Length: 124
Image 1 (tube, rainbow, N blue to C red):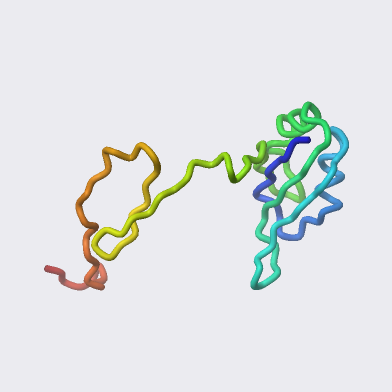
Image 2 (cartoon, rainbow, N blue to C red):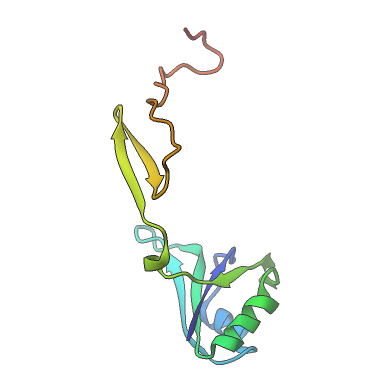
């Protein structure tokens, strides 16, 4: 099995359209379109699971950048969340600072404080 990320999809793309689009390269197992939890609207991306990894890699190569309903798709092999590098946050002067492992060269200075001035107003 291979999981494939599909992005930049038109919001009206259906599971069956995506299944047909990838099906020309091999057997499609599962298609998942991601929707906003609150509104139920599509977010413009999803995942296709293909049963044969070689067929999936061929689909990635051939379909990446190809249009579906007028939009060029962004396609690549999906990464498992467990494979992603963990992100650490720490509180610095009332702000959250995001860092990852090995971020030893990061500045320890506090971030600048916004005073709410717009560009057209004078600031100190």
